[in-house]
Image (cartoon, rainbow, N blue to C red; front, side):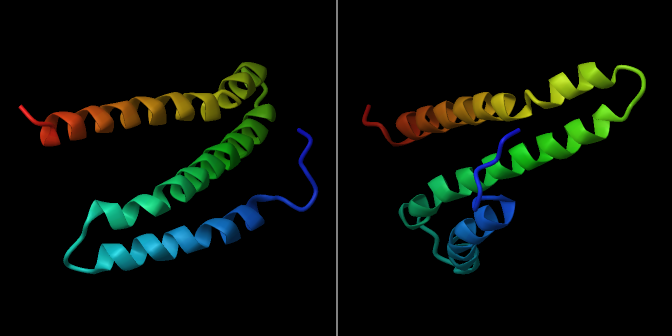
Length: 106
């Protein structure tokens, strides 16, 4: 795959480190409110997407050397990011529905 120069996995980790620190700090305090954690969610999703993409790259390069079913496994592991997006979308819709049902007026 063609990668843009200057933006790799290390720069993604550096970019997402602020969200990890934010999340670690607010996880350590006893009184948690979700409204203070909400600003970190998009960056945490970016970090999770980067991890899924990196995992897909590692698995596909590992599967490429397998003699039997190697090409089939490479194609399947390249689908991991798309599967990840679908799962996150379904979980997000479930969370939105749970909040709406839990906090909605009767």
